[in-house]
Amino acid sequence: MAIPKPGKRVRGSASGAPVMAIFDLLGRRWAMGIIWQLSDGPLTFGQLQDRCDSISPTILSTRIKDLLEAKIVERTLEGYILSNIGQQLFQILEPFKEWSKLWKKALAKAE
Image (tube, rainbow, N blue to C red; front, side):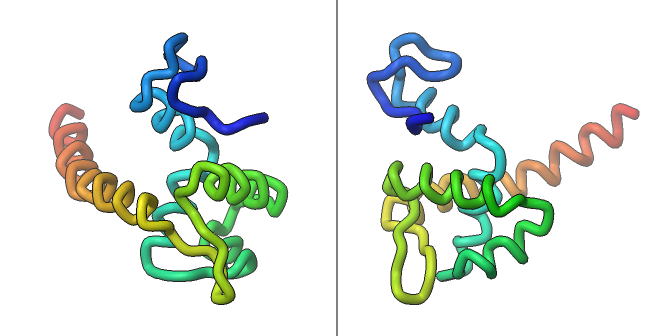
């Protein structure tokens, strides 16, 4: 299966709006987890698999290929790293961590 690309039909958008294409890619199983793990620096396949403890080697391999094709991840001699555009993406995603804590508290209050 090809990666979602801007300008092509993607999940949730017949026009392939760029924002919908990235949401489609990030919504794939383990994509966000891999990006999050690589935010600390390079990791080998084995290290990534250890950090994403319930991921199968097949899913990890597929998702890495997707992220490589999307230019979000690069392969180096040290392992996989976030590309420049991948690092920019992580900087956008990182505030969700703090927001999610606020959301958790709001849900707890509602219960």
